Length: 359
Image (cartoon, rainbow, N blue to C red; front, side, top):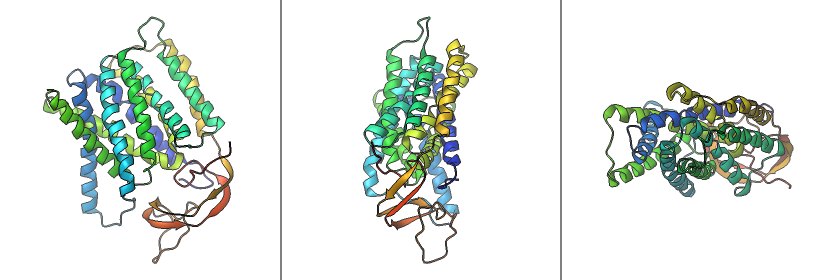
């Protein structure tokens, strides 16, 4: 669906579905926190994502005789993956669990939107990803909606230790997202599998060292299942979306995650909606529409480069030849060379368009 002329519909759908799955994590995790210690639950959630993906990966390798369509991780990628594991998989997850224990489910879901703000600021200021005026307006509207939703004139919401824990987790996930962006061209299933297994094992080991006990089998299975969906599948979709949209725009769409969290909070935690929800929904909707209708079009230069990532030959940027015939719509991965190319078309800051822009 990603072409030089069409809209990147598939990455948009992937980002929205990732947001829905992740948004459901806060209220469901809060329910489990009644039975599991925060560090233990953090470990089980990530371990669930890693174990399920390990089984899928192993099964696919055994049953499929097709050549690998995704690029493999290489030595230069290790530093980015290790940083993502430590920042997002370990530190952020533990902070979120402690924050959830002292924060209402709906409020925690809204606070998770600050991950989008953190990711965008880091992407723009540290990694120099281009963010246009329309995208900034969309991000501002979405952020204002979340601030409005966070208000509670009765004094039930405030800057508490729980809220600070969730905000700290969002900042660390912003770091994680940008580290992951740098390896988003590699196999997302392997990235999430390694991240889940490593982060889960680390947090569970830490929990046991702290004297925490493991929950019963049923509760453990619930935590593993939640992790496989809200962390495993959600992160895979997020990585795939970043290929076509870039980190900032993917994260802005990911900002719809609080809506799913609020809905589930009302349904399973029986929390009451506030008047601010109705006031903030138009802002959230307008911000999302602005983002989805953004156009970025200018003459740009692709420098000559040799690299490896999954690609197709019908995307306007991969016209190299092979020894054998290859269907242009077939996704595959190998080392390939791009010659210098200057052209003009609508594009996003995907893995083939991370060029600099005039101020």
